Each structure stands twice: as C-alpha cells, then as structure tokens.
Image (tube, rainbow, N blue to C red):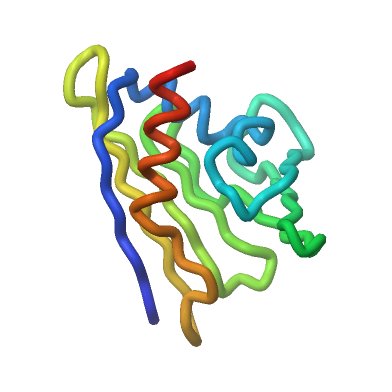
Length: 128
C-alpha cells in the first residue's frame, strides 16, 4: 500500500471547510487538473457518487464510503483501489486543521496531491 498525507491550517470554521470541499462546483477552483465535477445527490451523505472530468477529458467516479458530518469523509474511486480521506479538526471557532490522506491498495499513486494544491484550497476558501 502506498499513501500520502498532507496537512494545512485553514482560517475558516471546520463546518465551512467541510461544506466547501464537498460542493462539486468548488473543486475546479482549487484542483487545477479538474475542469468539472458533479454529484448524483444533494445533500452529500454516505453513498453519494461524484464524477469529475480532468483536462484530458477523462471521467472518474468516486463514492463516499465513510461520512461523519463536518468532521471527516472518505471517498473511493470506482476501481476500489484508490482512496482519499479528508479529516477536519477544529482549532477554534474560526479555524481548523485539514488532514488530507490518499492511498492505493496496490501499485503507486498516479498523481498524488501536493502541498501547493492544499495551499490553493486555503487561499480560495479564505477569500470566499
């Protein structure tokens, strides 16, 4: 199993960061490789399916397999090999820590997230 863990402090309440990260319309604002993301239902919950398309026109489908409102969610790619988990920890009423963990059961991470991607998330959400 290969994994990558990144952390960042965001000057917004955990509830706002949680909601922002799960809103498919926001993803292209902070993940440069994604041009569009959509979901099969709102509000998001356990079992919600997300689909996104990258700059090369390739679609990917993820399903929420663990969901703890305003605290943590885990998504799994439809190949059941790639996973990503967002965990939010309140620091005070106006800021939180975000831990981003991604892993594959077999093989290597094809395009792992970078700290720069989380820095862009921080910038975008703090300006909103």
